[in-house]
Image (cartoon, rainbow, N blue to C red; front, side, top):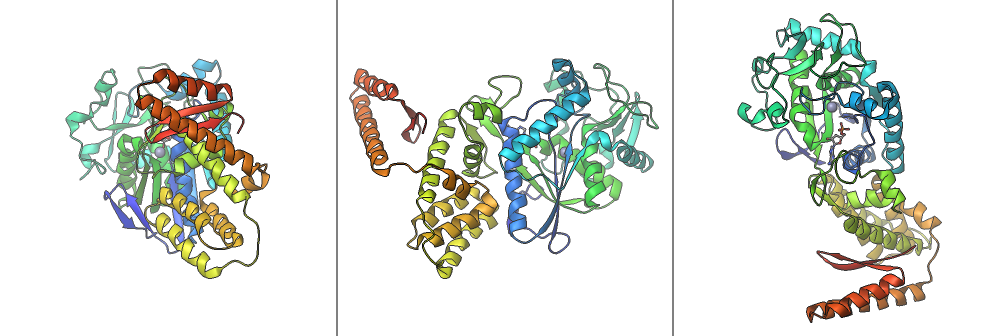
Length: 472
Ligand code: AMP
Ligand code: ZN
């Protein structure tokens, strides 16, 4: 299997440390609010990696942290603590907020068929582990005390910027965020391992430590939780692309300084889901959650399908038009599967040849877009229905779109009436296109309005016009 590795900036043959076994670490959510559908895209594509490794026969152990302390509103050491902000917003304690949003996160994951990792570890449960590693880093000379905080000294490393060649000057995170830089740092890239002092409101959660009562930085938690459960040689570390710097860069710095050798072999980063106006955010614009999509009538499987239609290393634009297209395509797919019958023995030769296409797509850096194409191809081949159904079931072990379940519970449509309606709508779309081309906008508007009155909404996309039938 070929997997893109952010460390080498290239696709590499995946070879785990121990034959047949994979250790996989995933940066978990910061539980101060609901996950937005961008966050969920990352977990969904990581789930595909997890499931495909298992499908390929690996014994996977996956660990995820829950960030319930230490993540500041900038990903570096400046800004307010996200958990504290959440608690203030809702007039609750940090632990109440953490519990509530952790449950919401896993409920979203369940709806999206995202497997729960073997180990889910909240950061607040591992303070002693953080203190142990920070103490060792101080002892080895990789960390220093300044102004009450413990900092990692990045100048002690041969190479700090492992993913990109950042220049120190480009790194003025604090300046970019409109926050003063931390004068305690010896080097601009240094980061906090343990805080006892912050210029922001006092932390609610604090622990005794050799350096005073305080709390850990965000980065140390992932290094320690990963090493605690998966040891000093990790196969795959996952996260969204924004985590590559500074979070993962800092994780590598402190982990390798601590253990004295290479820590993780493969870095798997998922590109972002953006809105048409840019970055997806929890604080501005529409807060796009899975529940919001459900309220608007979208099945979580439609969102999973939408994500699988593109490769994880391409950023993806979310719009309701794009999601509507996925919804229509998913419904059509289910209808086609629902029409298949168990009509005899499976044709093993055809099955094997078709499955090869799916494996090739997935082995090529998890090309889910091509795997979805293989799914459509399985419906088109000249074989009996039983062979097609067997292929769909096989692919769905990895894609987990609930295809055959959805097909079994779908109400059969009246094909003749449905086809006639679809033909009529398509004719109307063509007539409207012709009217627009002739600059007869009144006629184009009339066609759209007449269809709208019948519960049929036309959706204009770059690729052309599609439609949505109310209640369909
Ligand atoms: P957080 O809860 O902020 O720690 O983020 C959870 C995960 O979502 C991390 O792996 C982030 O890298 C990822 N993430 C954040 N924004 C997006 C986005 N717009 N699209 C995809 N993943 C994202
Ligand atoms: Zn992390």
